Length: 449
Picture (tube, helix red, strand yellow):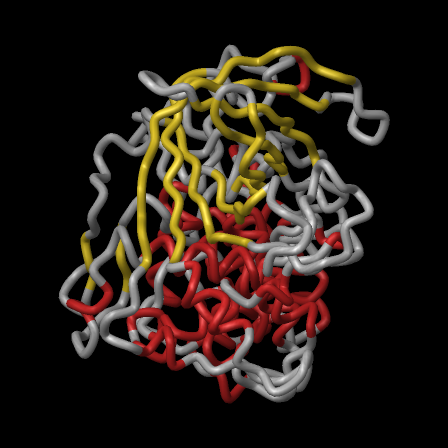
């Protein structure tokens, strides 16, 4: 068929023919003549772009919500499609990436994994996100995260976004290596990463979330759930376990409107809290190994075969005490809660609130007989009420001012000495991911996700 005969067809017929093409080929067709360009880029009609998008292995944006449960007001189908196709192109052939395009690629990938259909309940296997499946199928077995982390051209914003996506995604081939495990422990147990300005936790000094810190926490906790040493050297691509991408979907029952709920975060009920810590002597030895305050620490302690790290899990029952309005987030009041640990004298007390960058932060103290001994600061990973849970750091609250730890945090607000941070914690609902036991399924090239 000649071009003149093709363009003489009704626009509706032309669009139906174009729907049989890949979006990249559709864009090439638009360069053939002015008429075809007008048909394709008519600003008043996005029907063609909508159908092209819906033909992709992705979620329908009309069915998706944000991490906080909000829906899109307007959908720019052409813009969504163009961003996705560009990401697909760059990930399939990194040599086609333009200088400085890494930031846009990360932003588009995060948009895909943070705007997904909500799950009706924790057992909902009918609304598994196609966006999440596509990201896993595309990134598994690649060096995408490592290329960004180790590049000298990577800026701080790119590092933070990559670490956030990495935390949502789960484990990579680099994570199962000895070197990868040492780097995460070295960051986590470096007391210089904790100060009053970041609330002695995984936050930045300007009040944002430090996703590089959160990713290190995820990695260290994962070492006690997935046998990384067993997998080292294997053809590893992806691990399905309770802290990987399939557990990040928001849980939003049809009858629930979080904007009208006092317990919008879904904190009430049974939880499990797992935590890690290493030997006190090794922690202090590691932090004293630098020649000066800004020097490089000796990580050999984490490379030793006899390095010990304790991992324990406690059951807790969380109860909402009351809420306090938050002027910055009128629909998300600050939740004050308490929690008891069955058959023990231990308890927890704290708050759940939104952060400046729209994340859900858990901040609590715990101890025995109403005596605060430990403090914890964590971030909900994924959507509201997602099975993934909360990742954070915990440490001592009360101790002697002249010990190696320094002064206490809560009792002495003007404390300036270093805090003795003991390690990471993972807090998740007791009903989370019943089909995902505390082990893993490793995907290799013979599996499809």
